[in-house]
Length: 262
Image (cartoon, rainbow, N blue to C red; front, side, top):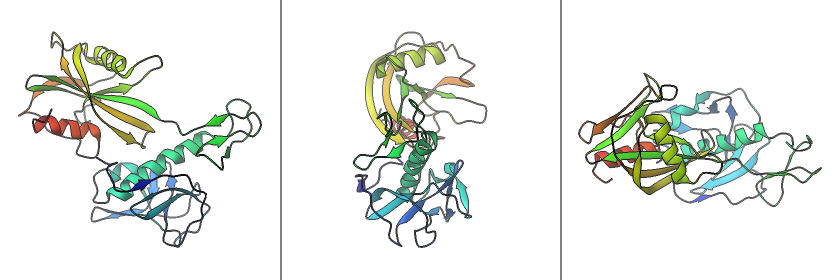
């Protein structure tokens, strides 16, 4: 999966960049850089001397975020998902998460004063009222509903890939509550034997994706929520095509089902 990199260290440090350090720069839903032969290239500090903040180190490579925008080549965030540069891809995804957090939290939501970056902990602080704002992380479940040799897959639009049932955790819910509610709402089914599979940070949308397997409980008659889904159906192990790929936990779980591992 996209987050499976070596030696990820995001210890908070207020340090200055060196010429060879990498700069994460964004414009709307794009990052500054290029992809050549499926390899990601991103600028270094020596190429664009900008005001920037240290974020993390991956395998001895240091990455800094800038809120500035320079005249550079920009690529869609979606292009990084299945490249041969997993470390750069992971860095770009996480940098985008923090970039959006900074964009959405300029002023204090309690008193309206401007927020400042704390010197001891990675958070924004209001020096007027003391409000503390940490990076927002939205928990979402991804559910593999299995019925013997079949798995339920759904798509959100005609041209979208088949994926797992998923949804955000709402206030007052356990993860199991969310699974039961989402499955009932989207396809009208009941499930049992809910088991944790794994999790994945998903900085594209500021999420933490949490994967679960479960079994069909009762009828397999699908009642489709047409406001949410275009189609949903059960596929046998031989019929399933993994349209997602290995970058996400959804694609990883679908492949695990194909391979008979879940």
